[in-house]
Length: 331
Image (cartoon, rainbow, N blue to C red; front, side, top):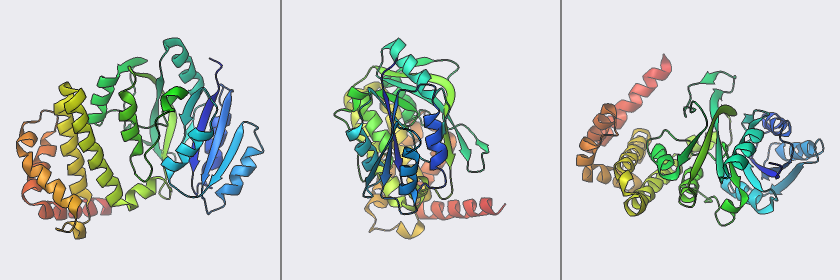
């Protein structure tokens, strides 16, 4: 249990939250750490802050690089890391002091390649938000196929920040650069090489949603990239399940339909035209799979109603949904 843990923190313009994040990592009861601050071309003074933080703890190393996105920063961290185990923390977030102690202990005792800790979510004022991923009652081992099923039902946690990996698992795998929702695609890739993931119940990882977050605001602003990547991921999952996990086909179809539902409920109305190949493809997919929409047991009745309406009159439904969201925000 004394192997070094390399904690990789990708950073971009995080001057208002970085110190809390780094201090929480430095405060770990498991002290054999290498803390890698990957400054991804910050322009707000975060770079010098990284250097100052490095002067407070000799376990901290700073890498300054040109801006390339979170995946690029994480890959740069993996390349220079020296730990037996690899962990990731986003600069917005912070962790409990016993997080890596619990994870390394479980990894050592169970002889497995990946351990996941549970998480909670809060807004920038510190108010607790509803759990996105429900923690188990106790530690449990989740086989890879079962973990994939939970991801397809949007119940699993695909975040790399809540996981600890044996170094060898990431030797030949890297985060896809230039894409969003990169955790999902890489995790699905890794699930095919391991038996499963040990999930621990304690909520030691704290996700903080900040309105000005450079990482989380990007997903909102870069609509087409986020939702198009989600559809690409869904298509790749369908191909994978058809080929390797046929028992999960119904779940994969549900995932594909749901990802297109999300796209069509959020795409700007101005982009709903024949020139938008992603939009046209999403509508065509729904029309080809209307029978799957009706018969899929893993979609809710509300999901099915929206999908069937979007199949018939997508623009009308999108306009009504936009009006409904605006009315809700005014309350």
